[in-house]
Image 1 (cartoon, rainbow, N blue to C red):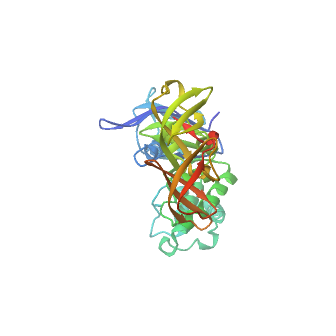
Image 2 (cartoon, rainbow, N blue to C red):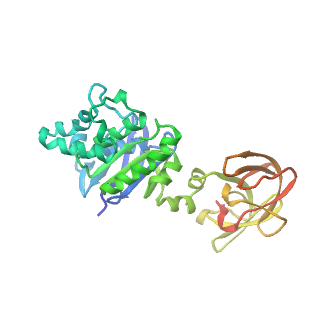
Image 3 (cartoon, one colour):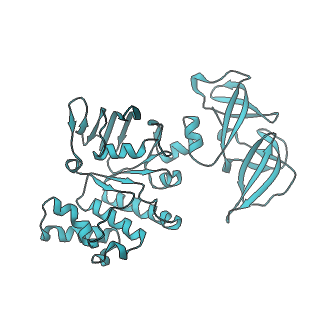
Length: 354
């Protein structure tokens, strides 16, 4: 049985529909990222799971127990759902020590000092702050404050922990480091975590399962590899990764493959258009990740000519910009290149035609 189940969840603010029938299942011990751009409904979904928002239709179950069910009128308040929640702002009490911040939830649950002392210390040790228990939040760095917020959410051993963009207030280097230890900590505890982010690199790095939302609907759910390597829609393919989205002319569809034309050159790709795909001669979209395009020596199958425009140096590689007719093609390479005409190869298995 999944640890957390969401069935046909709908929520509106006034007359505006925010969640439009979300169905999802999150397995025990998994790290699930709710991913999407601003306004996609990911934070609203997280807050609905927590009991901070009230949907008008659907159900939310934890271990099979309904915490919200529109059909039966069930809607447990947040404190009865027994969930851990890490806010984007950390929401630490500035006048309480690190120890007292972490102990707060246990005190609300009526635990004595003798009971909570070892639990709080173990939680702080688990996030690497065992020696800072008597400090105040203002005496901590942003990364340390984040760890306190996570320790507070974990200390009473909730079945599910919810994290609302907890890394957004950290600088780039700290964010990269935090991804690793947060994932390691959650996996060691064996709890289910639901993690909201708009950063696809963060989602790919930390998640066992990615749930991609757009406009209040679930677009695709699966492993990070599923979403990155096997996107099911044009939106999913463009949202994940860094891409070239090309306007191409469809020439033929055959057994899961599609033949298109770009700059007068034929290109085979993977047909992702489904049953409603266009007919020969129609305009469509081809998507290919920038790391999949290669500079090659000359003409050949699945190659197009392009004029060099410019490059940027990224430290471990270059990103080059080429022009093919009125369209641009980006790619990454470990080599410099220069002005003139070049041939670019688009491997057929990496070119997706929608």
